[in-house]
Structures are given as structure tokens and as C-alpha cells.
Length: 175
Image (cartoon, rainbow, N blue to C red; front, top):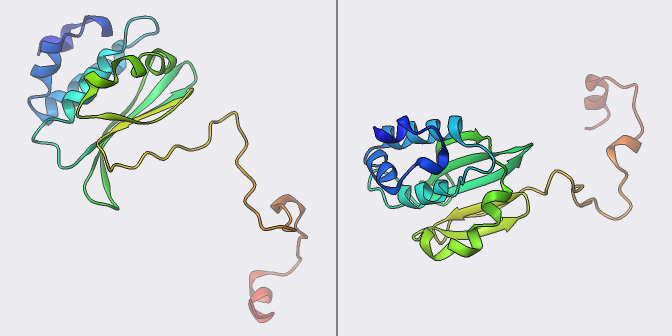
């Protein structure tokens, strides 16, 4: 496979992607290779072409979702197939050495070329691409605290009184 001979992500061509995506093993091998060659400033946007191409493959078992999240100076990528409303199969997960900002900045300009995938969610540190109907939940960004969802008047765990009771004692007290 020619794509596995490429030394930079920007050298991966549409023909390379098409050849690799002919089979699940070829696509996985290209994703693995991509993880080793992707670097900042080397046009990792071809990853978006690869993702949209995966979504058209007959060997995929369900609608595709591609989730990209910031991971230090790189990004984590998860490609999954949604088998039904409650289950998914992770096709590939890995880390690329390029920052997610390189893709966050590009996606709005190339959204039409990503068909059949569409942008489901976007934040400065995360992107989710997928078919219509695929969920796009994103956890809160790492630099933002989780929202306080405690009922009014509830104490945070750190302020709860401690008990000297053992678990058996708690059962005896009607727990």
C-alpha cells in the first residue's frame, strides 16, 4: 500500500486513501500510519478526507462517528460505528502529534466536502463528525470546572461528615 510509504501526513493523497479504505484492515493500517507521521504544521486535514471516505465503505457496520479531542500538543481520535441506538463499536482510536486547532480552523471551510459526514459538535478543543442521527456528546473542556448539579443545600463530598461506623454498622442502622 503506497500510503504506508508516505513520511508526512500532507503527502497522503486521495488515491492513497481510496486504496487503503478498500478493506477494514487497510483503513486501520492507514490510521495507524497516520498516527506515526502526523505532526504540527503538516496539513493533517487529509484525516478529514479519510474520515469521510470511511463513512462510505460498505464494510462499515453502521453510521460512522469521528471524535477528535485535544490531548496536550496533539489530539486523540476515535472512529466508531454506531450499531444501534445504544451500542457502538470502536473501529480505531489513537493519538496524532498535530494540535486539534489545525482541524478546528479548517472544518467550517470544508464542511460540504465531508459528506456524508457532517459537523455534529465543535468546540475549541473538540470536534465530532458523523452521520445524521449519531450522538455528539462532548465532555466539558478540561480547563472548565464541571457544572454544579447538586440539589439546593447539598454539601460537596469534601464537606460531608465522616463516620466511624463500619459498613456492617451502617447496615444495622437501616441503610
